[in-house]
Amino acid sequence: MNYQGRKISLVVIRRLPRYYRYLGELISQDIKRISSKDLSEKMGVTASQIRQDLNCFGGFGQQGYGYNVEELYYEIGCILGLNDGHRTIIAGAGHLGHALANHGGFEKRGFKLIGIFDNDKSKIGTIVNGVEIRDIAKMGAFLKENPADIGILAVTRDSTKEVAKEMIQHGIKGLWNFSYVDLDVPDDVVVENVHLSDSLMTLSYRIGEGKI
Image 1 (spheres, helix red, strand yellow):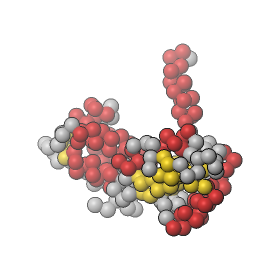
Image 2: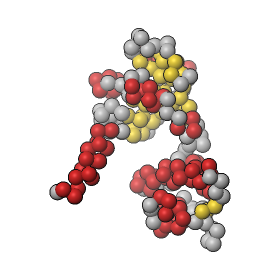
Image 3: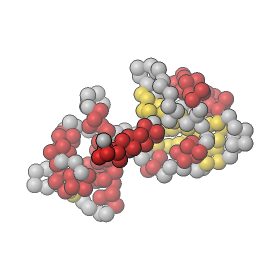
């Protein structure tokens, strides 16, 4: 089924990875089908919400049967673009860059890590999870020969904009930004900002809610 061009609420899209993750767990347990009610109990989302979310894409269940777990897992993977395979690079090979490069979910979720870049001479030439760390000054030349879809920004704040600009100039259309710097990008480039301290502050608030 072709899902391109559908205007779906970002709120719905942000719930799909959770569905995908839970369905993957069901597959590992050899569960073949599940009702929206049973899925809702596992996920803490109402059955009505699940049906509404999936109906945005045409619906996948059958009344009296529920959802075929493997088929729904595959279709959500298609919706999220995970079945396409995204070639990915990381700029920044510090602690965060290393952790991201070693994250087992990349290949499993269809993201192929093809390059890691840094300006630290002691790191250049070393291998992380089977991928060589290269001189970030040569990133543009690398991308000319090895086009990528996604660039992960794990560099320092003062170099983030310059590195992002070079990634975009060489065809990268998606940026996963860990730098705490707001980026001004062309309309055809997507940025997903990850603010770890914001999550901690939100957690702090929620812990203290009952004390206010």
